[in-house]
Image (cartoon, rainbow, N blue to C red; front, top):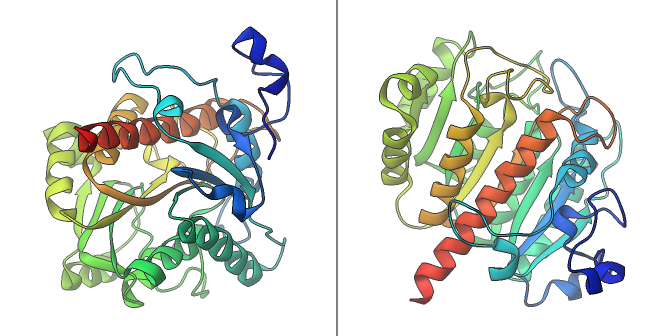
Length: 323
């Protein structure tokens, strides 16, 4: 196991630009035996072979790690997730370019190793197709899960450009396979011009709950999150965040940007609140396309903070449960 802070321990902190790169300078390992006793494991899924528009999300796990800030207390929540939780960086799944099937199998296997150790997987994508192996790994072990899904797009298409496995189809495939309970599935932030009547008819038939961006705008994020929590209820919940749910002003580095989206302050608060209130069985953040490999660009930065807010929420829930 590698400790990126080892040479800086006597100083109490490390410059962001120095030393080995891991998420938040967490201990780094690729050995499943080192997962014992951990609470959360960061996993990279650097693949974008199934995007329909701009590629580049294969570079996101490295960029998000590079954008991560040192541990410290959350100034609003009053908790340091890295002090409350044992967080390790489990490295990247061994994906293969131009072989999406093998990449998905590798992601599912790597996430499965985390789950088998009793640890919560937090996956850095990658395009949104990676949610299928992520959730499949959870559901194989725990049964159908609830799903909170932040996105511009529903990703419930049956095919995209005639292809059934795509970043536009994972939610359809997960529901049809029985891995996601559609009555405990909530979409938040949908807007723009896709999907169409066929996809929404399928969703309505299965009882999926959708909050459009105009619902967020008119009712406020607090009311939307309250309703979402009521829908997913008790039991394991997976959280998936497509960074394009944000307005491009806050996240320009993504493959299918759509103006008129959420603000980063609303998304960060919502992720922390949800993570603090549900039985989180895993999460992913996807569709981050950094402007350059390893760059700390604006989109990677907000994606990193999404993960930080989720970790803070998990820490708050652990603290509340311990009381």
